[in-house]
Length: 356
Image (cartoon, rainbow, N blue to C red; front, side, top):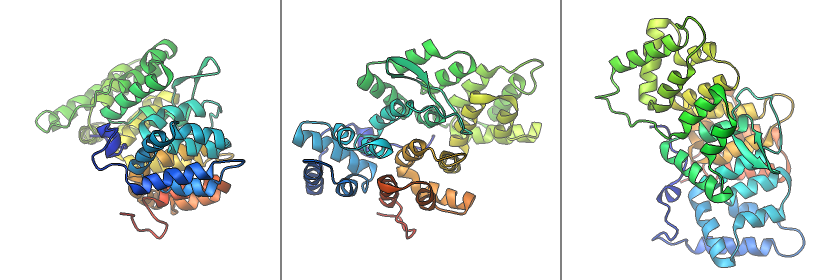
């Protein structure tokens, strides 16, 4: 199956875990409360309490803080901080599956179209539904069935809007078909008795006939259905079969046959199934490409992929000759830089060792 990005406590949905929240969580809640009293919050203390934790511990912190003080921790972050740093602290103060619904609502404030990877999601902002850009792609494409279902459920809970209906109303053409298939949460469980080499050849032939082999145009609908429903193991077999018969890998075929946002969405989706850590590493680099860094894309990527950061880090070093720490240091400053370094150091300390 596609890699999981949500920690165990998020998947369990246990609001009162048997192991409890722990004394350290209570101490951190108290420290945060004291650090945000009066005029001007102590950003360093809050970073130490929030950003230095993995997603499981942050889940506990967000739940426990509300129990103790009667208000959501993310609302406190919105009140106390500003700018990109506020965005990062707010995302960290929410359970990850809720933060992913908040991320695009904040990101739609800016309207960048300079990135290689683009996608559409329609989100409410100032009474309008706006097209977002590449920063939304990783929220819907290349996700597990459970994650897609949680995103849809939490989006409705937070904003009383049905995400599927919003996009059915606003999206058109191939992008609507791609996102519709992604939202079905219909990726099959890999079954070697069903996902055979013969089926891979069959699906490769369908993709060719609907794409490169079609006399006029491309039948994206049939392609999207196969790409979204196929588990990573089967996608790999399809790519091998396609390459053997037609001389192109599946990624290269998508690049040649599709264009614009739809092409970029398919490339990201297939990349997350075939080479997820390299694809995430490329997304992080994309956030820093061109004129100026997209701090919001960089921040949301580092927070979302924290659980798999050790593998992303290895891929990033292999691809670009530098760590994600190095990239953050060169692209960010101030409290945001401290926040992002703390998030990564929680799972991958800068000496290269994995934190246990």
